[in-house]
Length: 487
Image (cartoon, rainbow, N blue to C red; front, side, top):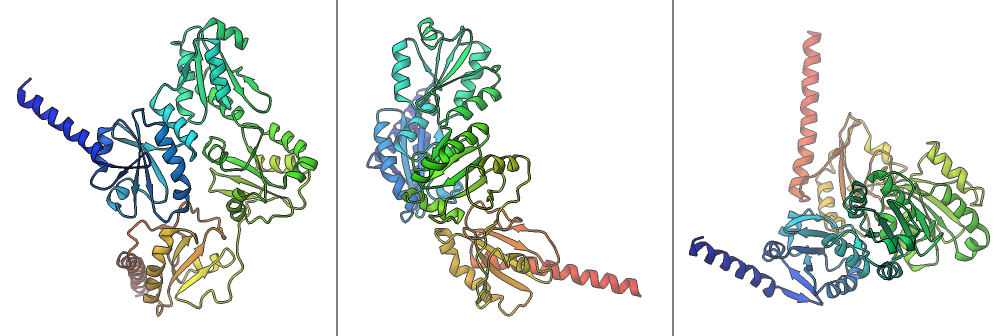
């Protein structure tokens, strides 16, 4: 090898090491920007990066947990970093940051999604699994006991040969389940302790029945279904610690019972748990204490009051459709209601505020569920709608631009610029998965067009003019054709 090549490589390594050394560290977390980000993720094998906004409440809540995780991982090869996405917009745009906080995981410079929780132990657990072995090798009974005591759920695979097809299927499933801890062994003493024969999987947990033994074949799909269905409690309490497990798991249908702890224990617990067992592995059954501080946001989302007892069913995989039972919630409600959902007999419940008296008094028209169809699907008008959330920072930034856009078309009776609070109103034709969402409803059509351009006044106006202009041109061509036919 030429000396010049060796020298160049040495210089590049030196420059790379200087990158990390020169980066500011704040409470254990590396502070990155547009000019340092690329070199930092290239230099370090494992990087978890948080894109945040200084005003973001969720970011403020995450900060101490994120810092604690960074300190716990300080002696490892994993680096935790953060980027103020409101300042360093170039790198935020590159990684498609649309909300805060957004966390991205980088392995040798390649980006992936972060799928763990927001508490320090959950962050550490997720990163440990992603950067180390997916299952701990258990060589002794003491190792098994120590790991079992430290974990709420531990899945242990016992194999005659840890290189067998069954063991490889087990490890493949372990690699894909970030919120569950796994152990693997071929040790005879561990096998005897677990009282299993042949290739076996035991799910050990510190709640409900305490243990589940797998009885299927060693296909990844059936094994994953077994673990997902048994690694959560029969009924989960809605709280900050459980939220990542509820929303981040594979089971996307959730039953939520809004009930005081006293009412639940005295009248509903036994029958609710019985229903949960019947639909185990298919539905997560959840209790929500209306008086708990952590319940405020979810109660507001479902439009539930503190009393009386209420119930909601949501399908997270199907446009966030919600279902509401009729009448008083009793033990006779749970199983029949759930069975009707499974049989496809329930109609989704759509929230709507009342139509404001002055909904059309300003240039931007105010839509709610009850007047949406009448306005948005008016065949004679082009309608451009912003679906927003009152707390959304991007929506607040767009608001004055949207107002100015509407003012520009106020004299045009055929163009409507409107907005709808999608935290309080829903329509079945529109699935809103982020804020703000902009959609165009062209005149004379049932089409719904997604707007994906820039959120500047110039770009928005150009878009509307193009849509209105193209339709006017089509109408002119149609009228000319009709006139030609008449001749």
